[in-house]
Image: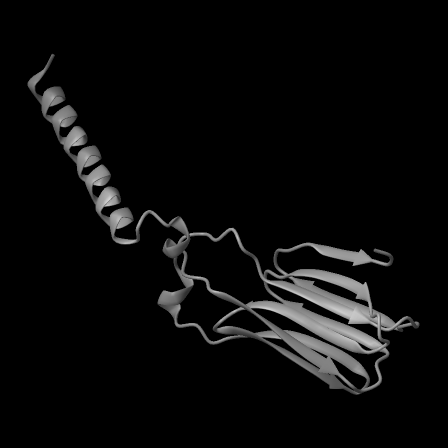
Length: 147
């Protein structure tokens, strides 16, 4: 075997061992809890809408959107959202507008993936609506008429 090949193999092995050592130290510091490596922390907030609605307009990034019939005839929006990515829920000219206000710094947007996801559940009273507009980058849309 050539001398240069041996040097490359020894160098590569040293980098692999250093990576294993760094991984072991970091995981020991977080008590082997992989969830602590993710930078996204989620909380659930409920927004009650008291105004009359005819139109629905959503501008979201990565939310999964679920539509359900309201049990009590009121409109409410339940959002599982990140701490610095709050939802804005408002009624403007009989249009329910839901959007995300991202106040994260640029360095907070980098990190490991998370198994959780932002979810927006919209409880609507049973009636007719004139339009539905959804702008979303990634995410699922589910309409559940009956449980």
